[in-house]
Image (cartoon, rainbow, N blue to C red; front, side):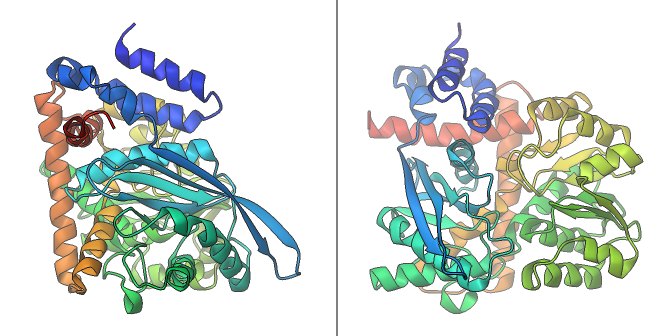
Length: 451
């Protein structure tokens, strides 16, 4: 049995219930096979075994009082996976689905994503099974303060710098940072995604969506195409989806879908700037459901269906897809439906939104496929730029941050193609992203010795 298969089996036996982590490990390790012969020093130093084991895993109780005075208990997580090339860096996710396996999968992916950005950041992830949906601002504040009462012991500007993720937006980051500042009596760049008045960066809210769009543009350019005039499907309606739509519009594309956990809308006239403004107000201010968009603009609404289910069932024609909601949202049936309905470019705004079988279908059908660890690295890239600005006590202009972001996404795209070419699978963005991210981290781990 090969080293790679041995390690995949080991992960499954050690933590049999952590399905998402198994999937992430398999997806990465199988593409690293070509590095084994080229880098025997990595094998000798046990780099492959070490990189799949977190540096530390932190699980803690989060007690808080709801508005009725009842005590509620949630579980908090922080998995600090690897800090070989910089401080741990990765978001916090507040969602009922959160468990240790999901946090480990996200933290593991973050190692390679952060490595690709060219910035000095390690990989980590955290969160809680707390659901902010339907909670009052006071309840969210009480939860965030209780969460930070434990988390503060494990983070710091030069140690571990969390950010937002699903369920953790500007409101939550504000509550978390305010309490950290109170406990530690210091104003430092320990969280990213902060508001501009207290150390945030311009373009940070837009960065993941913008970055995924820039990556799609780079992929399309390899075939002499761009987004102008393309019909585009976007899933989700949160931060990533919103700013993907904004940038696609700016580059001349037409987005016709958006969704939330209740259903999907299809607006074949396109979601223009005024409609997007309504979505942002609906989701970020009023915290409503996407069905309200359909009622206001006369768009079609599909209750209980994802964007990809709708494309499959309605034979909806799209050319470019941005899965921007959650992991494993596109299965093999939906991937085949995308191919059948004319989709030839997929740029992942979410983390691991396509199942392994879906990825295989995209690649077998010559679809330009940008995996999340490359395509959605714009968010953490701009978080890294926020860290730099905090360290220097500076605020860069919007134009400067956006220019740096676009340059980083261009560099990530080039790194993926260069690595896939060098290691024998030209044009394979999955292999290229994994190997380019891995080799940089592996060389740092090798330099440190056995630690």
